Picture 1 (cartoon, helix red, strand yellow):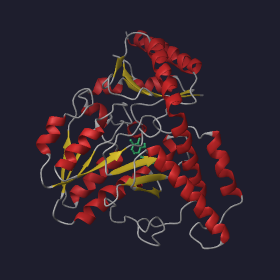
Picture 2 (cartoon, helix red, strand yellow):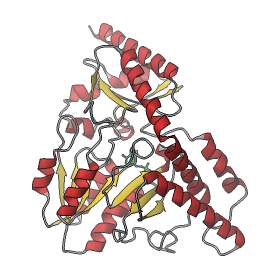
Picture 3 (cartoon, helix red, strand yellow):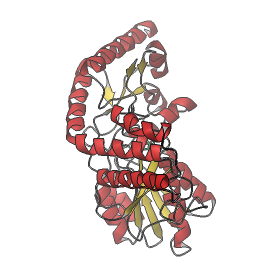
Picture 4 (cartoon, protein in one colour):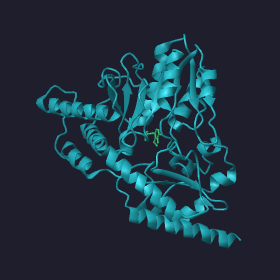
Length: 372
Ligand code: PLP
């Protein structure tokens, strides 16, 4: 199989699985128990926390481990609203956010929160003048992702954070697709990340919180995580996340340069006839979301079963609905249905990517011939 779905998840790094092994096979102590073995597990978790903090790269604040980035985002949104009380009750977000943000915001709107979902320009970027017009003294939180999971387009996070702060609001950044790929923009008060997008294990995420911006708890119980999040932590998952973060931090430039080369090779191998969805200037190049007139993307996936790629996003692929992100770029139904997402990174070789792109281009041309 040629794996080209790096936005859905990434292969676990060998260093990560090796580091996790003893914590699965031998070291089973509860990290919150006072025994010597418990303290050893707790110490391993603290090392992992520092490694994740370093990869995020912000000064101060704290990282709390969660079960996923989805949990971190739910916690940030719901917990910030709960903590604020009645004074400010408005959230601003963007139409191209991940479902973890959009669905949580919709749920909050159902509870009486005033929700504004801003459109994007056809290149997928947020219009900052529009944001400026919307920011008022009722806004509590502005939630904008750094790198879009479907189209790879980046948003100007530092400018958005500055604007939010000027209006007295906080900013949440979903940096799930940014961590380990690009330097995370400074400015947000809350940052959500996930281990499985950086060659770590599934089932663990984290929320970085600026001092004073900690949300009220989402999960109640033993308060094991900084007194703010309950549930026994898994030392194996924390250690795996830590090692993945350390590797991402150390290899950031190398991985970035590799992705730049892969991007150029993929564009060249695909040949003419394809259009890139979203901004070409402001994007992460490990995400190539493209469309081709007349192509049925679902049929391409069925024709090329040994290449793992996606219809815009993993979530939208399963539902059969056209992606909300492509719709937000004003693509019509046919354009959305002819769009595919190729995601590549650290372990993708140029040879396999070029081979996959040649076969994709050939399959697209064959479809055209059949339909002619
Ligand atoms: N945000 C973005 C941009 C994502 O791509 C994903 C995963 O697909 C998530 C949030 C949710 O992450 P997790 O799988 O850790 O819940």
